[in-house]
Amino acid sequence: MNYVLIGKFSPKLEEIKEFFVNLKFKGEYNISIYDPKHLFIELTLLEDRNKLWMKQVCFISILPMRIFKWDANFNPSKESSIRPVWVSFHGLPLYLLIEYGLASVANTIDTPIRFDSFNINRVKLGVATVCVELDISLPRVHTVWVNFEDEEDPILDEGFWQKGEYEFIPPYCVECSHIGHTQEACKRLAAANLKGKSKVDAVAHPPPKRFKDHNNTPKKGV
Ligand SMILES: [Zn+2]
Image (tube, rainbow, N blue to C red):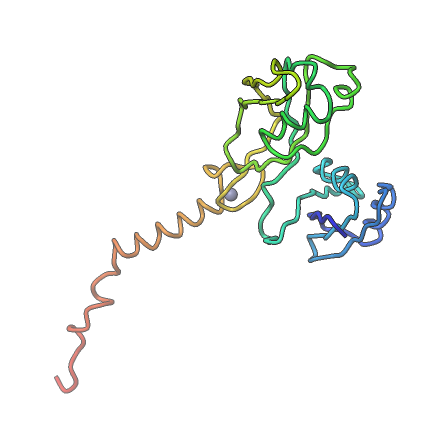
């Protein structure tokens, strides 16, 4: 298998198997249970990987299963910050509305995963949208320099600045590595800070002297 995704879920095995059969993957795949909340989803085709990954959330018997990219540092207590994200580019030159051209533009942000067929088929020209593999824990790049080299036509061998607009991207907390809240709103961080503060308070306000001062201990025989 070439590609691995993580399904975060509390499943029943039979329902999971039925769900994956209905997805009708083109290539072979294998599902294994990593722990009671995580599935390993191994796929042979990138096309199938992208099809499932881009769903982000699937529902199996009304229970949500969130899909994450797997990497060698997989830790079940953390969530990957790498996500498929659609980016829109307004007013691109028409000569770029081909897969190679759009890939050149999207690559300035991150690895392209999928193109909008309406752009490739010249149905939609004003706005091009490309799905890229993005690390949402990093600051976003909003303006990119596009340099589309063309040795035969020097006019095209020039660059230009291009703005990119991202679809909604949920916040990612780098403190606890979870999607859905910012570091400022992190409950784990707040709890850790509170715990640390308690320790400081304990040092700043030591117990009453009677618990520490052994000089007042009555001496034997007095
Ligand atoms: Zn957090």
